[in-house]
Image 1: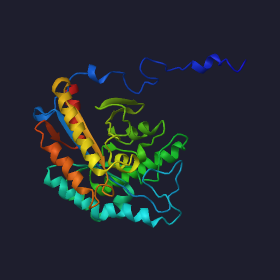
Image 2: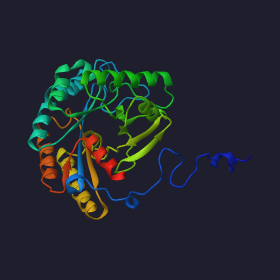
Image 3: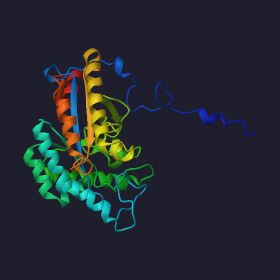
Length: 311
């Protein structure tokens, strides 16, 4: 075979279909789906997701260094203590801001953090806010090529411990770094998870198939995440707030003709909980909640309302 020719099998794929190359969900365009009606006739469901994370000081970085993790030779106390600052100081600024603007935050919790900081876990429990599992900690990644038994045990340990400590059923999941293996959704379904937030290929929930039954994919925006905008894209905190407000305006307009939409923001107390940034969180939340079309809700409440619309 000459260098200019490809083997005929190269372009053959057993799951080749219109729109995608797998059977995890049915292909459809968002504009073609039935219109969603949120409670109270609201046009935009507002999901504030808070990452409560533990980054080990002696991270292994397998198979890659997690975003937000340690970057300097051990012991990288500069970055380790900054992450710890978020869970000791920044989070309480968040809570005050949430209460001021009647936000219903969903907390994505690393199980290791729940084990290490009972004072923080108990604070969230006392508030009655929703928790989802954010994996065991930020250096326990799920990835292609991982030993299946290792990953299954990791998911089981993370969920069993967080369920016991929190007293909640823990129905949602967000992988550390949104990193998965091909079988992560299957393992999540097998361990009682009903929705996961890793796939960001849509703006509304959609049914997701596994051999263990259906999950629901709840896309959690990366584009409006504080870490992504401020630290990765190196925009200002003011720009982050402006982008959230712009997204709110657009989704309100879109929902007026195409049905309900979700505005999701993923934020971290070690990023926006800083004294020079917290005002921008307040600015964004004040703006979004001032809109009569907005319904602040837990992720689980949004999922329930979406499912009610499918009946």
